[in-house]
Length: 328
Image 1 (cartoon, rainbow, N blue to C red):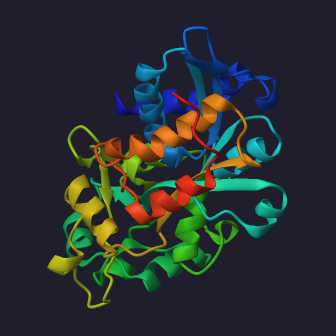
Image 2 (cartoon, one colour):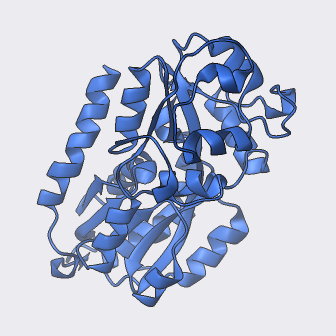
C-alpha cells in the first residue's frame, strides 16, 4: 500500500504540470455575487506538497470557485517554474539565494520542518542504531567520503555489512539542507541517486541495509504519528558521547519531534523554514488571498499535518510583505 502511494506521488510530477497553464494567462477576481474565483498554480518541493495540498483543500471549502493546481518535483524545479512565470507560486524548502532574489524572487515563510536520516527497520543492527545513533562527524564520513562503508565500523562492533547509501537525484531542498548540516552542498553528497522524497523512502524501506534521508512528511505517518512501517529514523548523537541521551531521544512520535524542532533541540539545518516564492510581488488576486489565508488561518493545520508552525512575530513580518488582502 505504501509503495503504491509513493509511486502515485511520483506520477503526479509528470501529470500535474500538463494541467497547468502559464501563470500570466490566469484571470482572478470576484464574480457578481462577490465570490472569489480564479486559478492558482503551485510547483516545487516535495517537503511542502502534503501541507500545501491540505491548505488548498481547506481554502477551497471557503472559496470553491478557486482552482488550485499543485505539483511536486523538487525545490529547484519550483523555483525555475516561478522565475520563468510558469506558475504563480513555488514551494521552496531551502533558503532563497541572493542570485534568485536578483532575478526577481519574492518570498514569505509559511512553516518549518526538518530533514531526517533514515534506515530500514529490518537492519540487523537496529537496536544498536537506535541506542547509539550517529554523530555529525560520522554522517560526514558516510555521505561525503567516497568508498565502501560498513554499518559495523560506525557502530563499534565486528562485521562487514555494507551501507547501501541513497541520495536525491533531483535538485531539492532536502538534499541541500542535509548537505548544509554536513558542511557541504547537495552535489557533494555520495550515494545512489533517487528521484523525489517518496522515491528515497521507498527504496530505503525495501533495502534492509539502506540509509537515506527524508523530509518529515515522508518519514512519519500523520495518522499514526509514528514512522512509516519499515522506515526508521537514525537518531543524531548531538553531544557525541556514543549514546542517545533522554534529551536527544525525540523520534518516537511525530509530536515529540515537532516539539524538539520548535524548541531548537533538533539542529538547524537540517531543520529549516519553508517558503512560498513568486516572480515579484504576486498580482494574482486569488493567490494573494490564499497566501493571506495561510498566514492568518492556515497555521492551525500545520502541526496536525506534521510540520512546525511559525511564531507570531515571523507571521506578522511575512504579512507585511504581502499586498493588501482582497476583500474576501
